[in-house]
Amino acid sequence: MFEKYNEKDISMTFAKGLEVLEAFSGTDRSMTIPNIAEKTGLNRTVARRLVLTLQYLGYLECSNRVYKLTPKILGLAGEFLQGRDIGKHVTPILRSYSLKLGEGISFAMLDGTEAIYVAHSPSDPGMITQGFTVGYRLPLHATGIGRVLVAFSTDEMQEQLLQDAPRTAYTEDTKIDLEDLRLDLKKARINGYALVANEFEQGVTSLAVPVMRGSALIGALGIVGPTPRFEDANGLFERILALRECAEAIAVFA
Image (cartoon, rainbow, N blue to C red):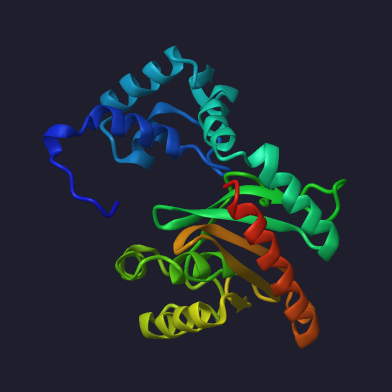
């Protein structure tokens, strides 16, 4: 995204194949070849060839000309998660602090112009919260986790993200003005955390801290809940301290 490459060194066919895989989402779980071609902007003939190749490799399956991802796609993510010791070390740490706080805690990393969850521990182990799962994506400008990921990036990366990342107004409180966001990012960097209220969803606040190894940003930890829950200063301070402790523990492994 931020580096320039010689086009002769890039396999555009491979890149287009990845575009086909990325076209599938929570809302577009099953698609026909015309659907895929329209969503990716690819020629139908090209889209068909790529889809059939991905089906041959086992990443897509077809029923009545409708295609969807297969579990094999998880193997790609699984290698990343294993390489970062997410299941072995990170998730147990999240679980420990989730129990301590009585809050669900999410660990996210920067992926292009979005934040992506790589681990999550719900406050209630018997409850599965829709959306708060590995692979779930968040905007950078309107969430605590997103703001932290931008605020603690390098100055060059921060400015590039501000320019390139979408700034959708999800609520009437969402900040989309660049100068307003720059001020909030500066505040987050000084304070060491970001608190974002009612910007992604009305009545919901997100609190996040960075996960750092030295001066290098690894990711961000965040909790989300009803806005009134974060209005008590003492309670907020306790959450920030716990998240920072959790971040330090995770930084050793992630």
